[in-house]
Length: 147
Image 1 (spheres, rainbow, N blue to C red):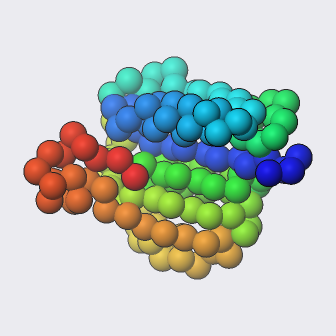
Image 2 (tube, rainbow, N blue to C red):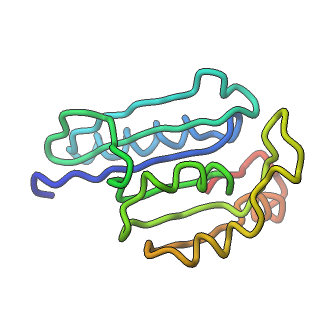
């Protein structure tokens, strides 16, 4: 890898393992000789709150902070959280999101945006959807859910 760095946003809901996933990514990159910086925003994210993690990795990374519109990858552990941080993704970036829908605490189901799949597929970024919870249940343990 040259001086180029990769910027990755990981978004989800408290309790989904978002911090653990970002730790694994950061450790793997570091173990492969890359410089890694990470920033977490998880104030009230314990069990149900919004969670945003920024990871930058490369030959030399000076800051963990990612500007809106500049992330190479957006990983959404929950569909609304992917939508909430979608503007952080580059136009030609890559979105990986789970089709899981968790209605935020204090909101009702009608507050959840309709047809986010169509929104994501209409954008210029590359997009992939997964069903991690369905797969975890199929494997026999819903606690294994991860993107």
